[in-house]
Length: 97
Image (tube, rainbow, N blue to C red; front, side, top):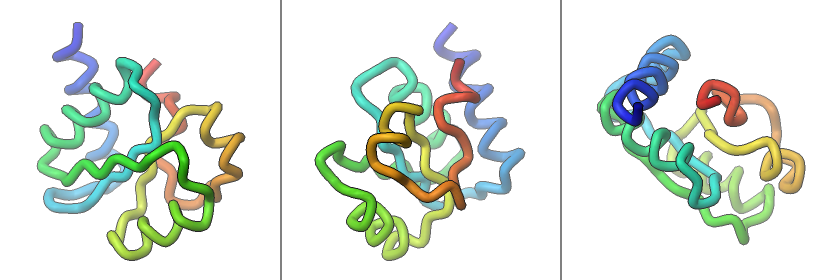
């Protein structure tokens, strides 16, 4: 089960043009999707960069800019609560369901 979800997520990253060595930021709680995203990112050869839930939208944007990252993997709840920009998001937990 976990292996197939990890493969599915890694394939989603490939489909969205995330290449080896690129950074993928994650803003998720400790839920199974966090681990699927982490392992899928590593399987893709990308760098997994977790963000802390205490950060607001500007610090998140700053870290992603400094880290030269386009994708942000987050949940619908964090997406709404943090008022995150839509540009650059691969999924809001949708590809993990």
